[in-house]
Length: 249
Image (cartoon, rainbow, N blue to C red; front, side, top):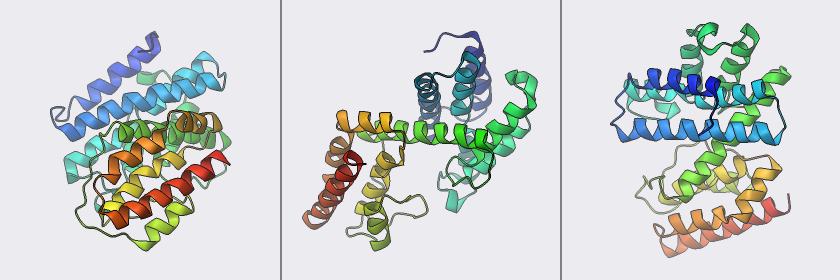
C-alpha cells in the first residue's frame, strides 16, 4: 500500500464508484483486485522512469481507473468479452468523461490524457499525442504484467473444453502478435491467449523479471495439464519459441 494522501483519495473515489456494483460477485471482485494491482505497477514503472511525485501519482490514477468500464460492462452484458458487448476502454472513457476535474484535482490536460490513454489501452493508439502514447504504454505494460501474475498464480480459469487449436491463433502466437482480436475455441487456444500476456510486456526491465522469475514455465505447467498429448507438444514448442525470442530480444 502506497502511503500518500493523494493516492488514498484516488482509492476512495475508486471504491465509491465500484461499491455501486455487486462486489460479492467473483467477476467484479477479480477486476477490483486487478485494478489495484495495475495501479501499483504503474506507480512502480513511474519510479523506474524517475518521474516526479505528481507524475507518479498520475500513473497510479490511470492504472487504478484503466478498467473502470469493466464493472458497467459486466452489469449490462454479464461478460468481459468486448466482442460480445462493448469495448470496455470506450465504456471507461465515457464514464470518466462525466467526472469533474476537481474530484481528482487534475488539470484539463491531465484529464484528456487519462481518458485517451484508458480508451486505447487494449487497442493500438494511432494518434500523434506523445504524452498519451507515453501513459498508454505504461498502462499496457502494467496491465499485461498484472495478468501474468494472475495467470501464473492459477487464477485465470480454463474456460474451453474442446481439443485442437485454431491455426491463426497459433501462428500469431509464434509471431508474437496480439491475440485479443480472437475468441478462443479450444483449450489450446485459451492457453495461448492467456500465455500471450507474457509478450505484451514491452519494457525490457519487466521482460527481464518475467524470465528471471520463470513465469512462462509456471504458466505452461498451469495449462499443459488440461491438454491432450498432441496439443501439449504443440504448446511446449510454442513456449520454447516464445522464451527464445524474449531472451534474444
